[in-house]
Image (tube, rainbow, N blue to C red; front, side, top):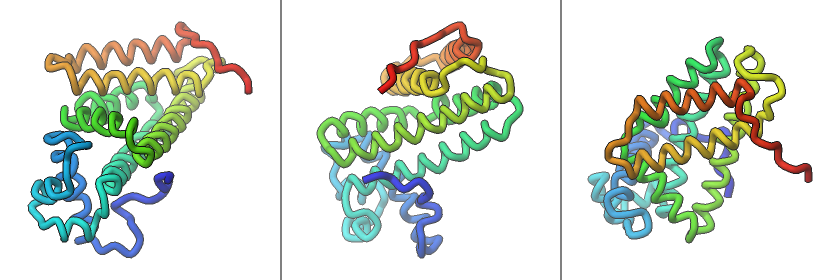
Length: 216
């Protein structure tokens, strides 16, 4: 099951605004329940209690925990799309990238990072969650590839930089930051932002030259 590229909770077909708002409310409640109880152990009843609604009403909107994860992912997808579009429209690619790094990763509430780890752990047991995770990873990497190409077009990255290799490297590094945000009580936002941008500038300048993947 691949998450549709164009569908978000905000524009689900034939959905009334009140239902859309309710689904977003439930998705936020599910995040809190999954962090509090652990994704694997959390029940739909606990999600319903967090959302201040009956379990029967909850099932009208989401049929399972997997469907709840899909709803959460669709909301995140909308935010990511807006962030990538902002970078593509900007003449200051690195400056916009740093602003988005702060708002979309480093300044995220800690429970978001914990939820990231919970869902990743569940993906090792649940094929449907794993498939969703792979689809999201592919989407994010494709967005970063466009970001690198945009940096090249504006002269902020060397032309010979392999965009896909750079995207995978950035994806892996930022994923590690999100894990640290979840686990380190003394996570230093300013230091990590500075280190991430220094690494990105070195990568874009060609000072870091990871090998290209072998040809198939």
